[in-house]
Image 1 (tube, rainbow, N blue to C red):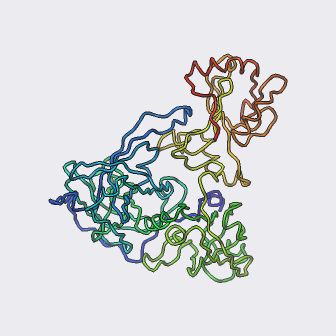
Image 2 (cartoon, rainbow, N blue to C red):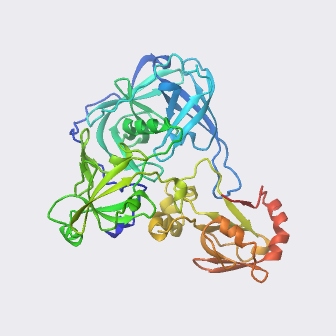
Image 3 (cartoon, rainbow, N blue to C red):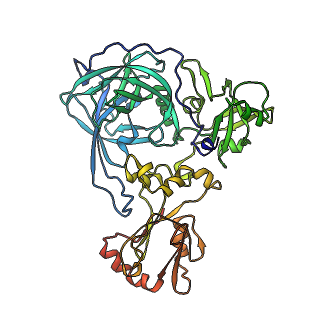
Length: 505
């Protein structure tokens, strides 16, 4: 139970995807690639070219080298083009290109949802998409269906690869915030590392977009049409609000002793609540640790946290939020508390990245920093941790990974940031401190630090002529001569080419 209690998801913690109602069928042999004489002008695809620069979290005062990305976009009604969010992340310029003619126009990013990995573009030339039939959504995909991956050759020829839907379940998306409905396919697709926004089509309708693909096993996870539909419906409003969250963690109730401990009756089903995040919808509605959730709306929850979906069969209960509920909806939550039934009315909200103590993503915004006599201070974020690469959970400093992993329990009060001394630039005032890095800062000049703003305010008030920085781990305390720091500031900035000594969030 401890392990699950420590796992907090932005909404309901998900379980292993379960087999859908329609049983998988053996995959027949399929051609590795089928290529017909169909050209881009006959399908609803455009090329999307993106240039941009990512922010450098190791050197937060600068950006990384410029990048270019080239992908496909699915043409939708109302003159919009659907792509994945990772395509337009940190973009400076985006353009659409007609595959059959090479004609181009600038594109505007209308909406981005990094949690669901979806983005919506619009051409500046309103007539640019004329002649391309918009794709409708195929919302009825089940296990055993065949979907066709659409890709374009440089010549504009459409390349079609068929795959079989083997599983429909709920999995974590790349932002590591929430679990959403996911199609899993067996598909022998020609894949490249920079493949973005590969559409999957069923009966000339858009069924899904590529989420991730393993070329070795030829297994693909895809963002399904119900999630796309949710995104598009929300995008129609003046303010995009995102997917709702409850703010809980739970544990299955297969153990009869756990049910007895919770005061449960002989009735089977439901999950045991192990964590309730303060300030989020479940907490506001009165849900408590130890409650057993037995139903959400009209859907009964079994002891594993699944409900019976009319299309998919048994599937994790967080699909009731990810695909079916919207921010602002009121949802009855049926629970048992000490053996007695209780109904709580939950008004759903979205938990934005900035509402976390350690934000899970921070795309398109420069990171804050503060340089004091060569000491570089930053606010800890998952984006910073991901600078260690795809295996950041193993490669990044484990003390910081731990803080990110268990932030909801370590900082239940929320409404703060974790400030770290990330590295030291050699300078006159930092002699002897060169090797210090990745230290959590607790106080500066006797003032508690819960944000870079707190640190910036604290350094205005040296203690007996010194800046005193207190850290959670050794060395516990560092001292800088305040007069020397001030005298060397201009030289420090010039020597290291710093555009400024601070950027506050």
